[in-house]
View 1 (cartoon, rainbow, N blue to C red):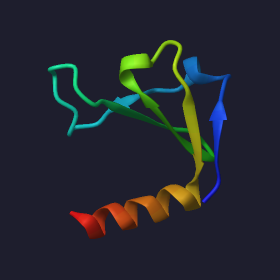
View 2: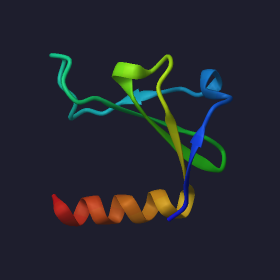
View 3: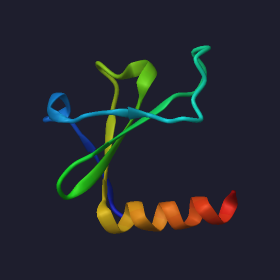
Length: 70
């Protein structure tokens, strides 16, 4: 799986907060789908924190693994 940190175009993405993230300020992950990749960030640092870009194949593999663990 190939991932890279993204520093541009973050404002153009529509972010979704994980349904497993609580409203009490705990661990929160946001995901945005782009045309060729999926982007992941920590919602507590959404404005200035890192963004990770994951290719479509890598994201699909992650979802398969996550489904197996639940």
